[in-house]
Amino acid sequence: MEGNHSEPDLSVPSSQCSVCRKDDIAWRYITERTEQNGKKTLICDFCQKESGGLSDPTQPSIKASIQSKEKVHDADMAVALWFYDACIPMNVVNSPFFQVMLSKASCLGHASSTWSSTGCTLMGDGWKDTRKRPLIKFLVYCPKGVTFIKSVDASDVYTNAENLCNLFAEMVEMVGSENVVHLVTDNAPNFKASGRLLTERYPNISWSPCAAHCMNLILEDVGNMPNVKEKRQGWREIIRPGETRFATTFISLQSAYAHKDDLQALVVDQEFRQFLKTEKARYVKTVVLDENMWEHCLLIVRIMAPMILLLCVCDTDEKPSLPYVYEGMYRACLGIKKIFGKKKELYKPYTSIIKNRWDRMLRHDLHAAAYFFNPAFMYDQKNFSKKPEILKAMLNLMEKQKGSDRTKIFDGMTMYREREKSFSLSSALSCLKTTRPDEWWKFFGYDVPVLQKLAIRILSQTASSSSGCEHNWSVFERIHTKRRNRLKHQRLNDLVYVHYNLRLQDR
Image 1 (cartoon, helix red, strand yellow):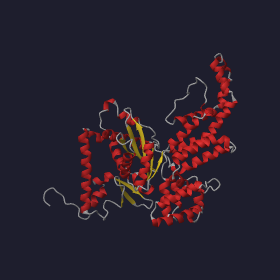
Image 2: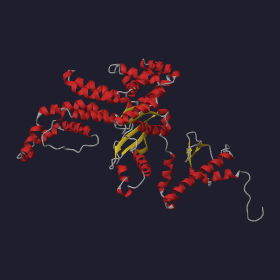
Image 3: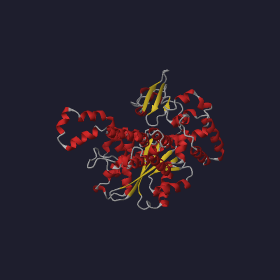
Image 4: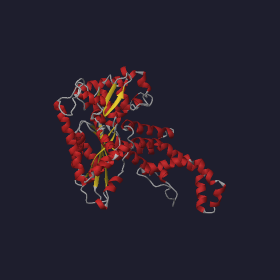
């Protein structure tokens, strides 16, 4: 070589030299990990793939390299166009949270990736805005979390069941009809009719009204009973009712009874005497010291405690709630009968309210099947319901399966009910009440794979259309202020999509 240029050392490949010195630009995007045996593994920060090293002889093909570069270029251009269109200063990339944002964005889709195995529940929750427009927010629930899909202005379809069904079908196709197991909506007549039409169009999908809404209506009906509704004339509410206003009433009653001793100690305290000069204060003292009032308070609290508990289960997305609805309603009726010593004339007014709402709203095959598949209830032989509707529900679901799978499902049901093979393991029986039902089937249903798949898809669903977002439209309200009231609905939908999913991810 002439000039000042020095020849490279040909004894070691140049690519290996740059790798050994770690001055290759690729090292900026690689994490090095040392295994217990001393072997070093390199992990890509973007795709999380492991490699033996940058000088690994298994190099990608030229075609693969070109395609990767094209994808990177496309991604760069997409981000750049967004920057240009939104007039965002380029120096925002210097923010320490920019890389965090990219990393988090690369992880999106973790919930939707499980829809094919666990199935999912499409939730449609309706409301009316300040302009009386009927709006419906659509969310998708699976055990991995809740995802906001879309908000729709249903003004043109709200009153027509067929058109509303078409809207639901559009959302089903967006999620994937093979992924949707359950559709949950309000219990309004138009939603009920459209839900029935949708199940005819998609036999693999079951529809039911929101269980949390049903619980709330039961509490409302009980609260309207003369012996419960009675209150002192002229007295005001001591708390502001929340969204679950009827549950709030009973929770407040429960809280008051829990502080009975403290309240009674208060009205007989020396310092309270200074207030007894007024008639109202003396009346308060009389009421607080009235043991009959407290006994009646305790009775109402005991009657409604199972319903409050079930409402709490249905109104959260911490775990799938569908496996607990049937049991909750069944136990509530048994508990009320026990409180009144099984005297029909005493418990009938309360159980009639529950059964009336249950028969009209929540008596669906999917709830009974989830009850059957929940091992904590199935193997509790003393308390498991023997009603024919449970077996009937299972047979109805079996009829919807492929012909070759029906026999396998039937045989699997027998094995499961009789605790045979994997269901007889001591570990399977010991964790019935501590393991989530769908997870239990993943661990111990391997001897009946067809039934296992069906059980997991049913037990992984929710029974409520709220799932932590009941009437939480403050985000939408803030977006649709007077300053932005000329935004098109699609623009509003995009804004709500971002805000809602940020909130759901942050919970």
